[in-house]
Image 1 (cartoon, helix red, strand yellow):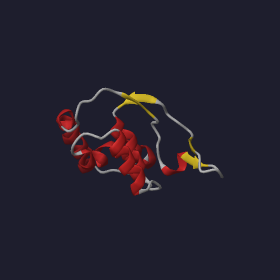
Image 2: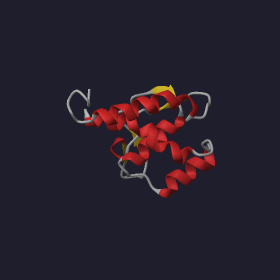
Image 3: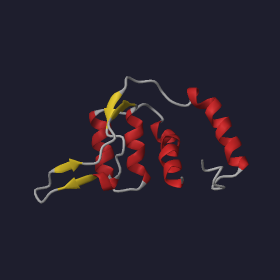
Image 4: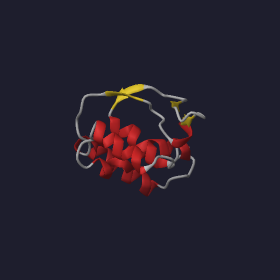
Amino acid sequence: MATDKKLLTSNDAASFDRLYKNLAGLFTEEEPSLIHGDLWGGNYLVDTEENPYLIDPAVSYGNREFDIAMTTLFGGFSDDFYRAYKEAFPLATGWEGRVDLWNLYPLLVHLN
């Protein structure tokens, strides 16, 4: 869609084709988890008693890295959040290097 709208070039499309052919070897395998699906800073709230709430979910089962990557896309999550997450349920080694890959889809949605 972005190519048809001239938002991406044919060179960009060729790069996506190369990436697509290599996707299988870029991600680690883990059991799917229930994920929020749209976990960015605007989709969590804290009430006057400091209780957190998640809103506007796009719930599915998938790789937890998707939600964690989304939290980096627009900011809003503290270092304490990531530290607590890693302590409670560590992510696979190298997850930080896959953040941009996980965020590619939501970024393309915004572009279109």
